[in-house]
Amino acid sequence: MVDFKIKESYSFEDLLEIMALLRSPGGCPWDAEQTHESIRKSFIEETYEVIEAINKNDKALLCEELGDVLLQVVFHAQIEKEENSFDISHVIDGLCKKLVERHPHVFGSVKVDGTEEVLSNWDSIKRKSKGQKTQGSSMEKVPKELPALMRAQKVQEKARKDGFDWSDISGAYDALEKEVKELKLAAENESYERVIDEMGDVLFSAVNVSRFLDVDAEEALTVANDKFIKRYLTLEKIAEERNLNIKAMSLEELDELWDEAKKILRSN
Image 1: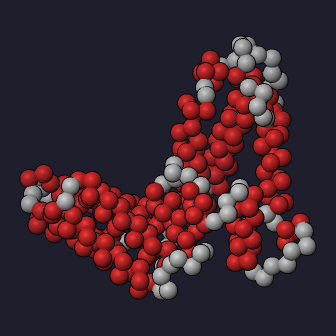
Image 2: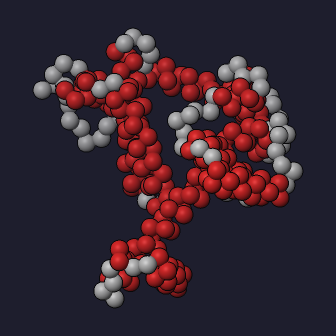
Image 3: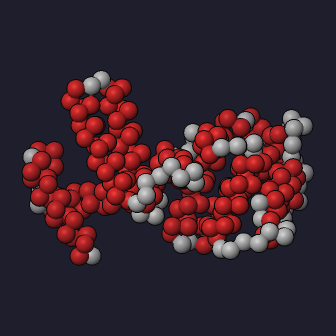
């Protein structure tokens, strides 16, 4: 058992000490065995749980989940501290320097006129600090690990900053229709690889439309997923009330139940 004083209230310094003790001899075997690679998915999961708390407007849950994200930051920093690479103080120092550098209108003499100019300055300073001379090189740095819809939207935004964009949404609509037609042709006549290629173009074009509508594509698909699940649960409930076997029903019969489910949910 490690030597640690139990308290009613803990500080950030206590968190760092606890993390170090968990990783030390006599601490927790599981924590001591972990690497960046073994816990990387936990970082993603904890981040999405923060998003869930925000969507639920649950302040107590948000407080808890932010703590779990902070744990991931401290965990990774502790691993590097043990390797004499960097520690949490370097993480904080780098972050503070970045915030000061990218807010010259707050910490310097730069004058800005609204949010758009702030974001433009941020992007310009970011690209300069990372040695990205063009928007194309900036696109390459958008992490492939991001959800594909989110990545597509970020890439398209960078192209827009170079003027490579439709003048209005009609061009985006036309491109989407064109890609759908090409997908249909590929599905009828081409190889599986060609279908994947065309399906990707359809999704990329759909993201373009959502961007013009000022809609987050990732959020929109999440809403659609939730809506589908609610409707299907309602469909199942209707079938159960009528002693119907869903698996034995025709598509036309299921479609009728689906329409009923939609009406029920709209009326609630």
